[in-house]
Image (cartoon, rainbow, N blue to C red; front, side):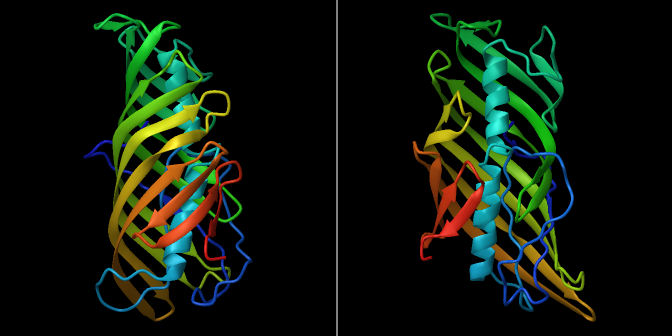
Length: 281
């Protein structure tokens, strides 16, 4: 589900990098989870400077892009897109239960869900049982789990509301808003450098088109507003830095997306692999 305001999300991201994050290399070895997370996270590791501020380094932007690309990959948010569309169509994913009131709960594909689904049939303006004739649906709830990618591991919980339409077609349209309280932690290969990030992220889903066959977005966009504070701890030294970012993720029919952060940082995302690359490369 998509996070709603007032619900807390905690995400922990672990990076294995070279000792000095100011001189990153291509050796990013990640540890830990076997479970995917839908959603979206949005996270970044950074070498920080003393004092408060809103400055972000190029590495901050690149790691935000990588996290958003992972979130938009098949094991990320599209997994929850699929669950929402299935429930709206009267299908109950393996591991989930649905009661007569429309409440669903359980674990599916490594994600834990708890929420409600309300459906409207074609030509009927009042709620109806979700099934093959459902035309629109509203899904509200929370989900949690973990996502493991070659460059990042993310864990977290989100909550919120999506409205689904076009359920009688091959492309479902999703709109909604999200709120998350995020806590991220990054570690170096030597385990001597520790990066932590506490942030608040708000997301707005604007006519996101989801291909039902692949469950990947093929149109629309998501806007993000991110604020927070990152801390870099090394033996005998702590550094903190306040940061603030805005981002827009625009989806394309070929299972790619364009991410623009702070208006001028452009990235190409491959949704099938969860990889991001700077368009300056």
